[in-house]
Amino acid sequence: MTAKLKWLYFSLLLPAVLAGAGSYAARAMGGPVWAKWTEPQHLARGCFISCIIFAVAAPVMQRTFFAHRMRGRKYTPAPDFYRFQKRLIITALLSPYMALAAGLTDLPRLYHAGVILASLYAVYYYYPSNRRISVDARIFRVRRAADDRKVYR
Image 1 (tube, rainbow, N blue to C red):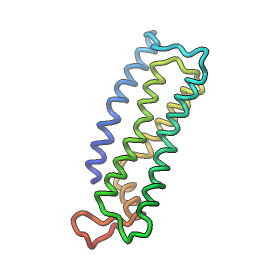
Image 2: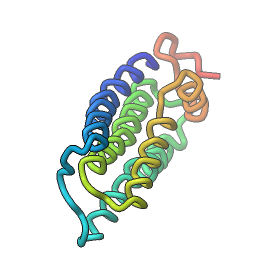
Image 3: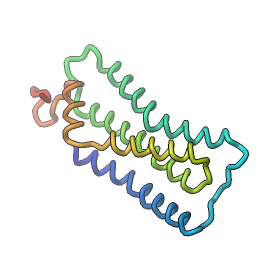
Image 4: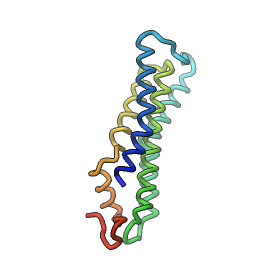
């Protein structure tokens, strides 16, 4: 399960990182900025808030809804847990694409820094390491796919 989640993680993250590195390098060499946001500050705030939502709020809500759905059960089936982890990764890794959009535009420094920090948080926290997956599996009492009688401990 962890290998599949890592493959999904890197396949979603790699395009954003490569495109972001290219856009920041072009911008550092004096390349064009695609959109100048000087007057409409609400667009900059919207970019910042949507990045925070994708990096922090939406994964917390997904986790809460999953825990609510699994309450009262003796165990969580492994396919349900895999879908939950997959949704968490997909949602959290939308924030690096928001950072890419921030790199292509001329956001004010405060919002730009906030978007970058939120993206780094999402990339760091939702990395599907063996330890994080096993801790979540213990919390939700996930049964292993190989043997239905065993529960992660």
